[in-house]
Image (cartoon, rainbow, N blue to C red; front, side, top):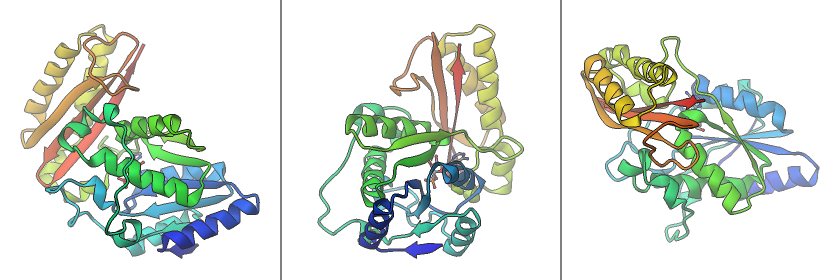
Length: 282
Ligand code: AMP
């Protein structure tokens, strides 16, 4: 496996591969790889001839009071996991290599970034769109895989790719979970034992909400109230950032589930901010 830290070198290598007729796949990550990341890599592997994984804790997607400096990092473990998954190239740049001191260009999809995580993380999706565009330009990838755990991110990126005619195919991958239902996340490392024990109740609450919707409750206000009560009872140490039901493509709140709705939540537990979602269809 090739390890590259210099963006220009990455671009050169990928252009060489393209000229040789190889297709390139990309899985962008912030590292501290877990089974969620490795399933994305496994999903991407058969889709391309050369697979690039990036490990980059992108500073521009963190707000001022967020966990940029404490975000968990373990490059040696990431390297070993990527290699074991058959990754061809691991791209691990320093922030200064990705952003010149006078960096001034941003890519944004503002209308899809108003609600859910965008509401409390105002610069987040602008940072994501910008870094992902840079990675698309650097790699010339034909396919990229993103997780549905970050559903809003995937919706934003799909819109960006469509609106800007970026020649890449995006694949969404289902949420990978612990046995007890907790969605895998690098930030789970922040949880205390007590918080970790309660955290699966996020998923349990969402499943109950989906059951209620299937049983006929289509009023979003009632469903959200129900979930807020569930969380109050089962996650006493959790502080709800949002409980929302949105149109799955537009990421705008809906009042009634007609065709489909995405129930999405963010809950702060101690140092961690955990997100999860469930798609309600039919
Ligand atoms: P991150 O390193 O958290 O930025 O995540 C990198 C990619 O992995 C994103 O596309 C995430 O949506 C995806 N991802 C992270 N956790 C999971 C999970 N538990 N299941 C599926 N995809 C995930």
